[in-house]
Amino acid sequence: MTDVYIIGVGQTRFTRQSARGQQDMAEEAVTLALEDAGLAIGDIEAVFSAAARQRGGNGQRCMKDMGLNGTPIINVENACASGPTAAREAYAWIKAGLCDIALAFGTETISGGPKGPLEVPKGHWMFDAGLNLPTWYGMQASRHMAEYGLKREDLASVAVKSRKLSQHNPFAHFRTEISLEEVLASPVIADPLTLMQCCPKTDGSAAAVIVSEKALKRIGGRAVRIRSTALGSGVPVFSDTSVTPTPKRVAIKALEQAGVEPKDLDVVEVHDAFTIGEVIYTEALGICGPGEGGRYAAEGKSLPGSGHTAVNTSGGLLSRGHPLGASGLAQIGEIVTQLRGEAGLRQVEGARIGAVHTMGANEFELDANVCSVFVLEAA
Image 1 (cartoon, rainbow, N blue to C red):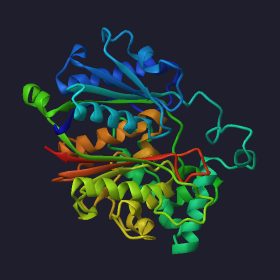
Image 2: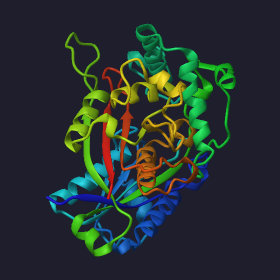
Image 3: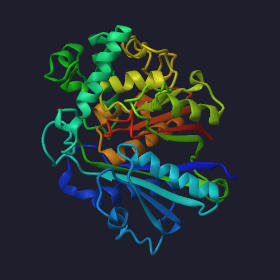
Image 4: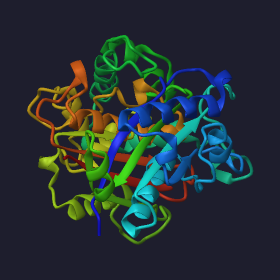
């Protein structure tokens, strides 16, 4: 079967801009991705549209004025991993020979909704008892503290590092540095997580053009190879059965399929909707050992130029922002940019292999709704 490549990426700035609407933002991101690939909309043979909160026909509504002329559009919802799932579907279509040039895009508007932590469905005992995403991650942070001695300062250092990098990312919502003292002094949201350890509710869109080897030979361009992609749904948490947690299980599968080890990864983007996310998902990828994720950030090992695997060079969800359906495709876009050597002041010099680890969660009887992992390689 054919190898598969990403030859174009584009995104809007992620910030509070709900008045623009999903269509306007999607058109911008798609246009930028097409320009990056050197293609026109008429070259696209299939479209995969991602949004975590969408009405029927979201992709068709966003693309109706782009001139697709009957091109198949498939709508994808998979919680916060909707974007990478759309990219994986594009990959699968190309692998299966159903098309040679595909577009995956994600778009979301969430800043115009209720203030405070993301709203959750009613009528379920967990939600009614007060469990929401900040609480869910806060409990994971507390457990990590109890099991491994994670320090509050180490946890907060993830946010400090995030802002240090996001100041160099023109697409990021937050673009100013913050201090450890500011992070720790910000209001508590779900102990031990403070406000500055939680991602902002933002709006935005991101897109990627994905092609077969045959199409790449014809088109050319600055390609990044998709070396592997793995996806898995969560497992029940209220069970006596011992299983590998989904974030680690899917990471292991993706790395094995790619034929690489964690030490081979030059740069990764992980799902840091909250600071503890970067800690536990860095550990899940095997970049550091169990219980070492907080110190990895606090000691500066996650920064470009440290001699270790760089983590969330974009600023991550914490600083770039988290418009659900678009976030994972923006993560892919950051790794593509890094592997091309085009990330400017946040560049990881000589980066050849990168990974994207994206989570989706709101069904708390599972350890995750879904985990998606891509391993990408400079072509």
